[in-house]
Length: 265
Image 1 (cartoon, rainbow, N blue to C red):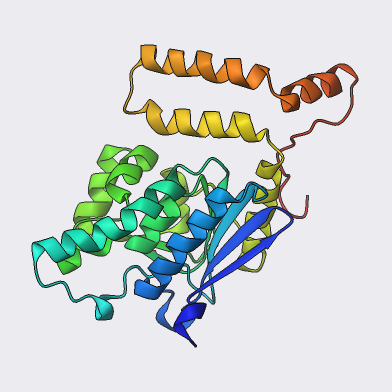
Image 2 (tube, one colour):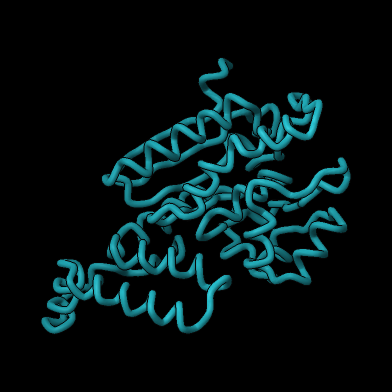
């Protein structure tokens, strides 16, 4: 497998599917994959025809984290540069103004867990396993996990997962709020795409405004959030999507946006 194939990018019907493609290494992140992710995220951000993103792993795993064999950090400056190099696209993906759905099968360890946490929704197979193993190798969580994990599962559970470096299964991950749905392995990627397609039917403006407001809410105060709400609603009221949605409601026509039922329903 050539290094250029470490990430597969497929854009079809408004859905961009990013597939981490090092299955023999459990899709461990190496430098070529990180570079490919940077390029893909920048491409998606600039391409308004992309309405939603699915993030998945090739083979039987999502991502086992950073490729330890490829790590050769000799001093603090090099270590900081290594992380600073990825923070740009990590922040862009986390704040992307379109829906992002992660489909997690097998392991989501370390940076792989962190990467999944950047998504708006995580759907997982019953055999998915999540872990922040950084303490085992004397490192701290990265790829924005120090920001996302406490916001997703709460500070007490974040401390548990980070300090213990223990593994949790899909059921526990769903119970604490990290996983949105558990789906049979053979239906996982279909369900992730179905959710992405459903979310793609939402108002692009309203979705972008709501997502960015939610991303700011836990580090803001009520007055600031009320102002963001007022400004956002003022913009949303003027969109053609809102006008068409109201017209359809009045005429008792099918709505523009419908949450997708479960596969097989």
